[in-house]
Image (cartoon, rainbow, N blue to C red; front, side, top):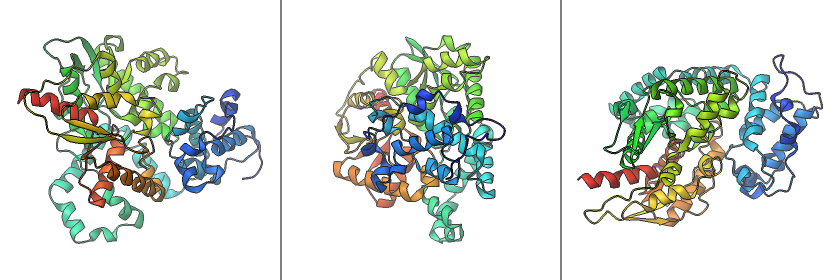
Length: 448
């Protein structure tokens, strides 16, 4: 990287250069983030630490370093797990720096290649902005899996003809569900006595791969006195876009979600909460106010949206969880809890999922060593950085084995996909489940 002034990107100033100087200078270089950073822990290289990356960002913003390929590669080597934010005594907003820096990387095209551009166009600008198209692809994948064709391809080792990177990723392919969320959840569901009215976010990947978790979430909300409004065919929340340097696209997805829920609920003010059950989505959804702060048509609406968004565990503890009624001896389960990064670090929600699990009859909760350490999923990190992702997954599986648990609970679809793939490959007799799904099972047992 050579010294240069903060050059405009695409005719516009750098995002980093436009940040308030206090944001860039808030880091005290104390080093308390270092032991919490997975990439620094693995390499012991300063540039792979939050402190080192912030120093690079500051130098780019001030013109001391050129925004080049090396800077871009470093930003994408970061997991974005935000463990550094939890450890930071100065309250540095690493998430803001991280997203703005990646936006500069993408605008400058320092990592651009024909293949990378094509993949990003098809996914971030294509599939994840068009929910109907994403569902169509999901349906094709379900047919491929349910018909037995996937098993036949694997048995005959036909995956060996795939490019090396795709061949390595193929075992991570999640199981698409036969019925998506709108096939399991009505647009409005109401308990006999409703004390609250909430909106339900179904997500994009969650909708295809864990639609039953969305159904379980609705059942738990109904059991706790909530009328649930669930718009069908919801767009992506935009977290994938924001975390991958596509801030304008993230803003558009935010506007679409706000419009959809306003229309479905008759106004956001008519909802007591907007419920999310996916850690990565929730962390982003709570910051629509920051994302749309400069939009005169949406700034106030985004503020109201962010005020309403609640993680499902957070909401249940807030309103008081109704203990399930036990008519027969419950099934004994030993459960350990993996803390999704964007739940514990991004949203500061740690105790509430444990409280949800404590209400499940028959559950013995065993603490997981390094529960807050990233599993290596980190959005699409397991695709872009498979080697480091694999090391983190192996470390997580080792700790899970030590607990002797029957079930590992996790509250993020990316974590669940990663853990399920790891458990299957390692041949472990461990089930992966969302905490809310375990509580939903207990409520269903009341009716049996």
